[in-house]
Length: 86
Image (tube, rainbow, N blue to C red):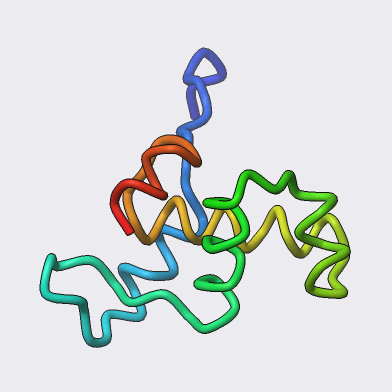
């Protein structure tokens, strides 16, 4: 085992999606869940995570998880790109 080896960066949501397979949209991207679509819609309105959490009666952490899943499913590096790709 090499101690100089740096840990590999992983995207857990991405791994789960790749493992899960399933149907994809016409663009080849996995479809969003209903909740992920709701979160994406509120992102498009310019809401921050805390406001999305209040709107959907969720915790801030749950919203962060949904945003991460949306970014992974749409293969978007940030919120603005996710909105454009949706």
